Image 1 (tube, rainbow, N blue to C red):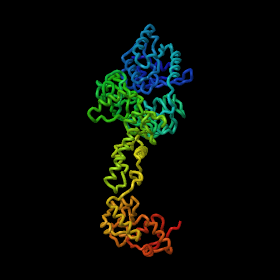
Image 2: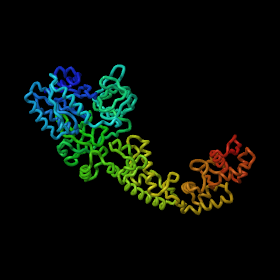
Image 3: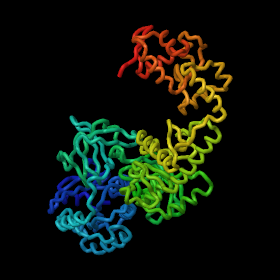
Image 4: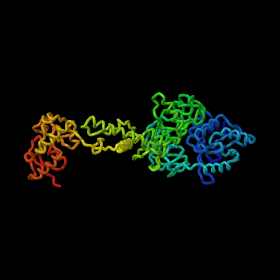
Length: 624
């Protein structure tokens, strides 16, 4: 059945939109065709000629999906046909609100034009084209073509201006190779601006996680261009991918600007009950067609689980069609691209109630409240606008690149304070709570992989924990969270440490023997706690064991070497008074200590750059 669409496009543009011999032979559009023209105002307009026959509905949806303006064509001699209803349902579900009603082939049925217009008006009453101007034309005789150009110019002038600064999401409808150029893809650029050497991400069936590609060059209307803005039919020459790895339904994205999702919560738009939907449908979005598993959440809401991840954003329109069916089942709108799990009894009912109150454009405060904390980049990739700090919703605080719910922040801070106090009460030797332990105890949201940027996620997680620490009026000391200025005690080991400190006042360079530490019940844990409090210094290695003995000292391997915290500085004053250079034996005698102690002490001074080893037996003090 021929509505004369291709003939009309040829009359408007002088370009043959039917690309295949079979289409021209049969007089039937099978796949997408493309043409363009310049209007009297100087505006250029591109056309995507979509199939009208019901057997090619999938191809039609791939062409309509990215289009902002529609010419809805009905033939005067055929009138409203079943596939016209499919096209109506598609534009209604996609929310297309700009276009024209065009009655073609008027020369074949001039007396039927009024009835066809009236029927089309009635059928389109509940769509965005309800008030669209109607134009009667004949592509064969030229009747009405000039008027159509004028009306089309007016529609373009009234349409909302696309955003040239928007993030790129270019749905691909064709991919092919040009000799000497390589891979070329085509699609409709609905927003943003493309330039040569731009780096993009290609996401598709073969590259579900994304493949980095670079724009080698661009064409529009068969001419090379250096800048390509919206809304434009674009042919983009790519580096980094072979043509046979790109397919219709793949998409080019701005790097780092989009999140990918395979689970979305949606709201029905076209009146069909989603409770009665088949378990599996085909989801059409952009030029993609992906199998979707449907979980109804009441009559008007559902959860779609897609067979592969797509770059969806809040407010996106999706068409659902039963596999093999020649009609649109329903149109839905995306409400949530990162919905919560439905694991407990009653979760589905509660989620349906939440969705009933949600707006397609999203609500920043609600999203932050639901998550507790979320990176700004994640909100942006979902399609939420994040205002400046002074315009943030009440109850939302910005912490670096993270938005935090203030009630949840206060709750986390209270819980952290209680956890730190409990840690120190249970173990006086504890230097405080580690960051990981704090995250685990508070059950903080995992931000480390947010938006696919691991490093940015790690920074976001660190910023959130730091904000909670400040809110709790705690401090971080040597990587441990504890109360600021809190006295650090050794608990039951305090008397033993006091004994060592007393001994060091009389003999500052005499390290206690292992048997002395055992008698005082000072093991590795107590010594580490004392060192963390600045009560002593351990020498001879990471665990302060065996440094001297392993190098020939009198102590057995594994004995700890511990001195008072001021011993290194005191030793320097003594060694500086010796004739330079000095031997290990001279240092031992001057410091009144043992070989077991002097060797790790000198090595400690070497490491700090205070002394310098000249040869096997001599050192000197480094003068600043």
